[in-house]
Amino acid sequence: MSKKRGLFISVEGPEGAGKTTVIKEIEQQLISRGHSVLLTREPGGIEIAEKIRGIILDPDHTTMDSRTEALLYAAARRQHLVEKVFPALNEGTIVLCDRFIDSSLAYQGYARGLGIDEVWSINQFAIEDQMPDCTLFFDIEPEAGMARIAQNSQREINRLDLEALSFHEKVYEGYKLLTERFPDRIKVIDADQPVENVCRDALLALTPFVEQT
Image 1: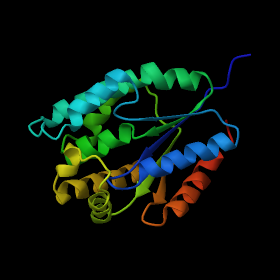
Image 2: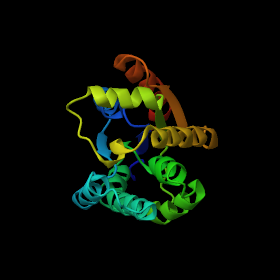
Image 3: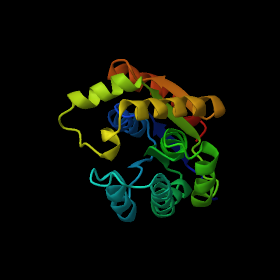
């Protein structure tokens, strides 16, 4: 008897949404319920993709062309899928991924002005129709998110953090468009509340999907 395919969950949001903190709590909660869980991130998760991440987010690389940026994200995404995500899903594991294709659509497609459909096309080649079963969008206004970053002295500052507030406002607009385009897949979580409430709401949103595995 073949193993049941796993569940692919992505977590999205603008800078300062608190994704990294909450996704770790989700991982622990799902493990405590007896699920096999793999926590990973984009760009990164495996050696090659982490090296590409270093190139993309290096604060010195401010001259990077927007199309180059989009292609690098897609390349890192492909390698990460092949090396880490596909094998885990085939083993029946729940994969929790900190960012996936929606980040490219919001950041490069909308905020950089490349076009959501154009960046979608680039990524179709990379992902081979592997979309998340469920995506949690951590909803927080850009100003509030950037204020959180400014208060967190432990957080690594990357190239995207150096962008003007207007850029992050465009990212947020892009995400909002995606929640309208994919309402069945993307579940909106109010991230501008205490972290324990965000964790609770995220787990509630995931429960119907997890119960199917």
